[in-house]
Image 1 (spheres, rainbow, N blue to C red):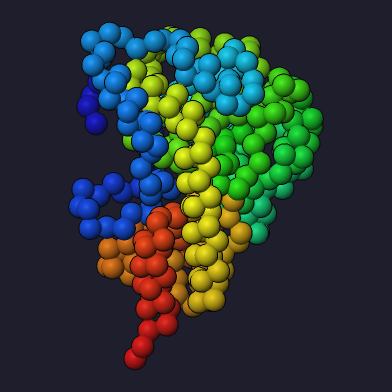
Image 2: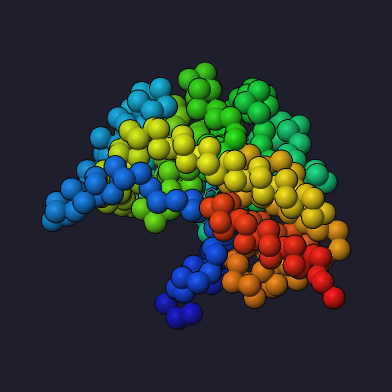
Length: 352
Ligand code: PMP
């Protein structure tokens, strides 16, 4: 730390992303990426845009905003695009939590980091013992609510009706629903943005559209909320998205068939994997995401993590008392998941 750092930031503990190993020999199931490449249309769009990088990208992201609006059945003024959904979440914590924020104790690890970075008064609301959100805990909570739906790392989802109750019970507060994983079995609440001006839905191209490295996220909400996001974005980095990423986003939205078939593929692999590991004795709730959250009655989480790593399989484990015995395993290809099944069988049923 240099002597020039503002003391407000000296205690910040940055978010720790999942390991991104250089070596190709790992089966990488630790950051919920899509194991498949993006649509071939995405590659074509990036190539044709690359020759124009001498010019600044469009600060209004017009083509992308139009494509998002068409895709989600809303108006362009209801859509915003960010450099990953992380950027949009950061703006929410920075500017849209005037009375503080509330989020679950087990959720996306970036929420508490943004909270501290922007010095937001924070209420952490424990999930129920089965890791579900107890809706009533948030009724009339008097601050911005941020909920990942499906939640990470649990993969558990609230229904649209449940989120509608949350919106109705908090009419004067913003409710941010982070739908990073919604395309793998959740129910989007984008249609509710027409009825509720206190709803902001955030999503990403990183998971279901296989574009994590392109860094593209979106938000859908009331035009005034979108105006707020633009106000902050244009005060930090008007060219937040590069032109190739924007072109890639438009192409990905247009190739609906590719998107749908690959989401179904991941869901099928996930359901088969769950079935297998339950037979091995693992506990695993039904997941509405592209990962599963699992625990075994006799082998602890760290041992499972270490032993998988020894077999060159990377998953996610947290040194957090509440979930020390759990692993989060992203869903890879069928071949990758077969290798995980084989490894887990060896670990929990060792032959003497
Ligand atoms: N929300 C949740 C719940 C996530 O798990 C992630 C990524 N790990 C993000 C948002 C951020 O995604 P991105 O910045 O890649 O769009």
